[in-house]
Length: 391
Image (cartoon, rainbow, N blue to C red; front, top):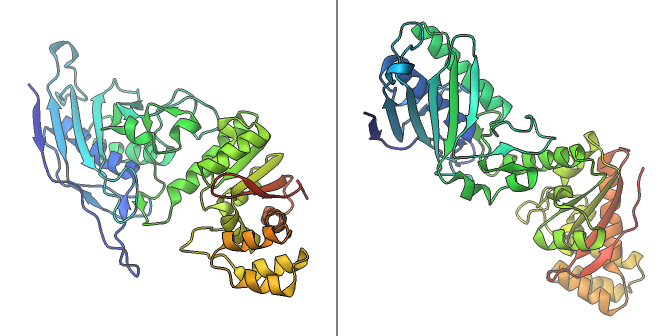
């Protein structure tokens, strides 16, 4: 028979200087669950809480949310190194993302560990709610579970430590699953990246820094990788779904050439600088792209603002009178400034698009990429565009 118990969720810590509480990545949670499960498989007891060592040396402790130990069947009872081990052990940890607005916050990450014959090494499997790689261009081969390289190494390292401690060879199969992971994954980039069936097990440090948006930026990078691996020579960085529809209508780009840039224009440009494509289209709302035109690479409203005096100067260069320029500088919003110029026949949208393109080219630093920019209003109407230009 199996023994199952429920316990309290995991614990966070305090991030100095910000007042915000950091959290743990899915990779850290999977490592903690794996460490507990493998220990129980060899000893019959689950360590709770279970402590792991993260890549930068931190040693957080995780409470187990669920555990299960299943005895071996007679035909599979060889065990490991005479340990008489159970058939499998499962441990689960609730992901605590701290104060970060992470869609996986509260997800239950499970690890089921089974012994393998000596010499088999560590084998990873995707359980329910963990995706499988179906397209090239990601850090793992097609067909592999979407358990990223750093979490894999963390789990290998902790399996080796537990094996050494208990005199076992350390040959195991690790199946990671996430309750409701397939449903949660619909809110992530995974379907577009060709990661099907669930979430990715992520993390390079094990720690989620609140509002660092590192997962989003990593998804942008993986999106570029997938597009390049698919042979796409034209990709688009879009600020949202409306701008994606505009780009598809303008250029007929397939889904795997569309990068959900959000506010992270700088992340797209810096990665494309190192991993060039022939052409990059940037498409987004007029106000957001006016920030790029003014030299801002983070377009979020909390970190950059529409610079109306800058728009007024652009309007002057486009033929606006001093009176109109003064109205633009005093406008409530970027959209209001655009409407003032449109009524006067001044093509402020085109001026912003051209300036944003030039700012993008300056970030690309001569990389062999041709850039064009499309500005839209909230309804998706094109209100400005630049000519393509390159180095």
